[in-house]
Length: 435
Image 1 (cartoon, helix red, strand yellow):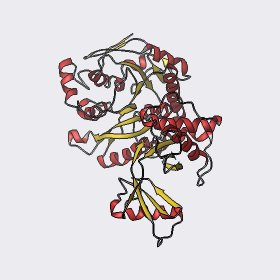
Image 2: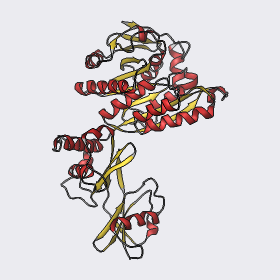
Image 3: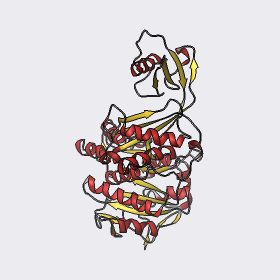
Image 4: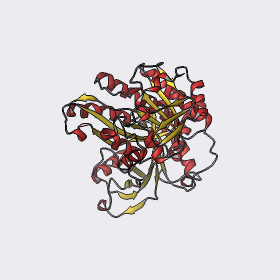
C-alpha cells in the first residue's frame, strides 16, 4: 500500500530542495540532544508551527522507528486506525512502515484496526514526516489515527503500544501530533493552553483529560497525547520539558483569533532512576528485589543516596543515607527505594494500585564537607547537614519553596529536633539528580 502526500505544496513546500531548505531554517543543527520516549509536536502549516516542531526534533536522539499518532480530522475510516504495511511518500522520498512493530501493536490491541481510509487524507501524520526524514533518511514509522472515545480507551491503547514495544525489545520514539487551543483570542489561548501543558509536564493524563473537558480546550490531538503519556510512563518516562510554545498570532500579528502550538519532550528515564522504579514495583508486587544484570558506571561507586517518590506531583516517600552503607550506589538505590516506598513514617506503604501513578527521582550525594559558617552555603547549589551531638538533619539542594540558607537550616533543625538557639556544626554537599 502506498500513501501519497496530500498536503505537500499547501502545509509545506512540495519540491524537495525548497522543503529541505525550509526545514533547515526551522531547526538547530547543533542543539544538545536528549534520549526521549516521546514528543508532542504541532501539525499546522510550517509557516505557523514549523519552528515549534523544528525546535523539538532538534533536541532529541532519533531511533530506527517512530510511532506517529494523530487525530482523525476527516472522520473517514474506523475509529482507531493503523497501517502495518506499505510506504508513505513525501517530497523527500519514501518512508517505510515498520511492519514487524505495526503488526505486533495490532495483534496486541482490542481497539486498533487495519484501515487505510482514515489515514489516506489525514494531514496530522504527514506533516511530521519531512522533519523525521531531515534528521534520519532511513527512518521507519508506524502510523495511527484516533477518533473520539473516552480517556480510558486512549490510556488503554497507550498501554497496548507500550507492551508491544517491550515485547519486541525495541527502542522507538512516539510522536503525538497535536495543536492546542483553536481560534480564540491570544490571551484566552495562553490561559487554557498553560493549564493543559502543566498537566502534560506532570505526566498526568487523567488531569489533562479533566482540564480539557472542564475548560473546553479545543486541543485536537488530545487523544494521541493521552495515549503517549500512558505509554511513556510504562516505558520509563523520566519527566517532560516544554521546549517551545507560540501561537499563529506570532506569525500573522493577528491576536484576535489564534491557534496554539506546543512542543514538548518526554525524556527517557535514566538507568539509575529506572532501577529505583523497578525496585519499588518488584518489592511491592512480589516482596523481592529485582536482579541487576549489569551496572552502569554511575552505579559502581559508593555514595549516599536519597530516593524520592511523588504521586501526582505530591511527595509520597523520601528516604536516604547521608553516607554509603552498601557496596555500591546500586545497592544504596535499592535499599532506599524500598524504604521510601514502605518505611517513610509520614506515609502509609505504597500499594500496588498506586504504581502507575508514581514518579521517581534519585539524588546521589558527594561526600559532605564541613563549612565554617552559613555564608559558604547556597540552597540552590548545596544540600546541608546540621548537626548537634548525635542529632543530624539533612536537606537536599534545589527544593521548591526553599529559597534561603536560613530556611534550609531551620528545616534541618526541625528534622533533627535541634532548638533554634543550640550551637550546630554545618556540612555541605552537592548532588547529581536523576529523574
